[in-house]
Length: 193
Image (cartoon, rainbow, N blue to C red; front, side, top):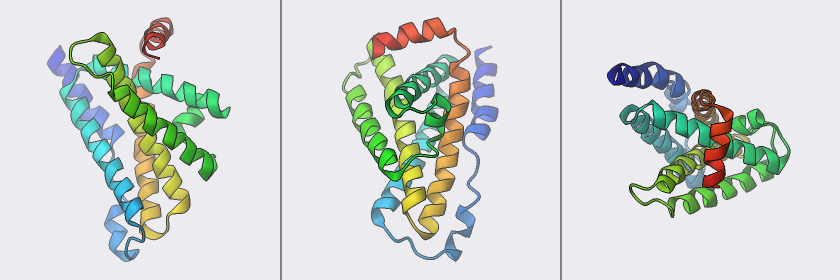
């Protein structure tokens, strides 16, 4: 059963979560990259997608569900902070560049803070890792939306493509996170916060 479950997660879920980039093949037509900061952020977002793919492949369904629950929790916090719905917080659309940057900075510091609680073998460590992963996904999503608005040329298109892939990843993980009863999810995440 466990092997079938991993096969399900690693093949169909990964194809859905991390589709192939369609815009990167046209990159040479668009000219040179303008800003090294944007290029570094794009590389970091790609790296996050690859590391998440490896995590999802190597871990079981339980951890994938935990990532989804943590994403829902963090999206709820973002939604209450900027007065939008959780779905809008997971998509990071319709926000000003200032809001995107402010939320990115909050998520960056939150992910760093969660990583300070990582100690192998403890329940708090697992929760901290799940919340740090959720913050990392959303941090990169918000940063790519920011660059989609502010960057130019090929970097703008590439940032938009990565933002769409990160959004798809977040939504798919949240679907897994909602499979668990909401009362259990809220009780676990209250302890983590």
